[in-house]
Length: 212
Ligand code: URA
Image 1: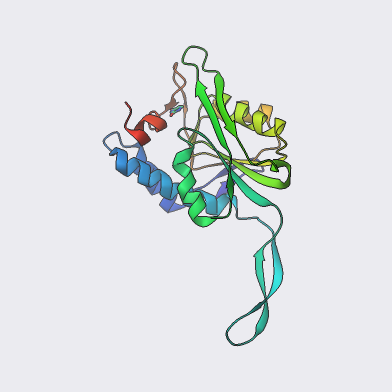
Image 2: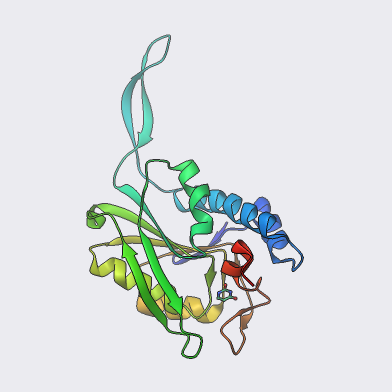
């Protein structure tokens, strides 16, 4: 994994291979969804890499010992609807006790600005590490708006996970939320005039749900 302090590029061969499969235009809806779920699991592994551990007393069948268990704040997964949900099952498979905050935002096709239509989150966000997720960090409008919403509801400790990022999206997000580190599997070239990432993989939500 390459990283500077704010952007962690997850270069694991399994992630890179699966991402290439997802980019292919003829990948089926079923295949796309399964791959996003699998990459969600692998990205969850990376984004939780530095969670603190504490030594606790346990009993093996043979003797007592001190063993490491995860300590510190509980996790909340916060997918941005609808494509962010594609990561969720994979992440919950690794951290089944995590809470989930759903954030409904759509992109106005004219302005490309994020418009809120749904928000439901655990009440104790200030005590939790919140992992905000959306496969595509394109303009950065949705991710920035979602992070701001979470902040107004108390979230202080946040991380952002995506599959693909455009340089424009990273710059925008970091300008608005310099304290939130980003994990991504790739940084692509640029955005086109419609705010799509190039070379990208198309519309992640449409490809996940077969709505194109
Ligand atoms: N959202 C997508 O699903 N794809 C893009 O390329 C940009 C935003």
